[in-house]
View 1 (cartoon, rainbow, N blue to C red):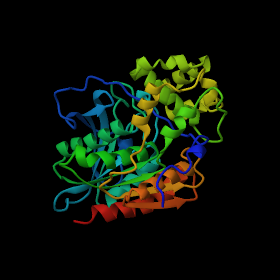
View 2 (cartoon, rainbow, N blue to C red):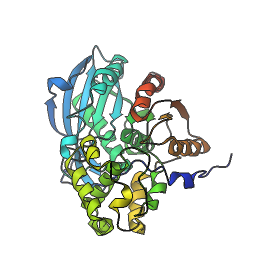
View 3 (tube, helix red, strand yellow):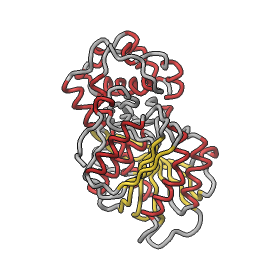
Length: 375
């Protein structure tokens, strides 16, 4: 089988999810990543069945351009920890927005509180959730900045272990959508970034990929796409870049309509923003093509999912009717990973973006058991 891109042309018409780059905040340059700066009990609504501890942590992490703060949540299972401490599942959440009020641990979806987290706890795993840097903390949230989000997850595990001696070193990462993208970057970076932790694998559902290929095709000519939330995702990308990289002159690419979209996504969470901008096409936002080499290089560094060099097993779940992360983009990712010899399990589901995540959960949990329950 010849490895290489087999559908770059098709990728140009299925752009679906985008990215934003965050700038640095004063996060304590002299303190190590994972240093906890605040710890608080969660409100009753954020408790989950089977958790003996429900705490919100603020901790030092690393953004795209320097130290930043992140928040996260730690849930501990009932009972006595096994020898070596509780194994950890770091849950990487999907898109919530870029405004501070959109922090996932402040307003998680009920599905996770009533199904996903309790099931992980019953399986004998501690659960650590990161909001990612800049989401509810100083600075702009680097939406879909893969390396920054991976470091947020890694440092969240470090922070959890700093406050909970019952946690072991065995861990895996599990994410959906934006979190699936983050999980893949975590699997690639963590073994070298955190050798003191024993990463066993990564499970990702609805993970956007190959967006670095389709991004350069955006311009005033781009019609409205038969997908979902593209304008909202794209607006979050440009809002983050405008805030953190003024040298790129993002306003110089925008029409008045585009500037209004950015104002909305900066102020409202993803669902509320999408209700306001879904009728606007990406082409209507742009006054000229996104063809500056510096801009494209920054986007590639954030978006491009690594396709080789993994030292742990991966699980990918994809919905066949997903209109936010279209299956053709994932199909190319799968081909590239397999050509590189990656230890990879793939399952396909009939559902859409969120429907497939629900359908995939039993298989993802089976994968997590397989990598975490072995000695």
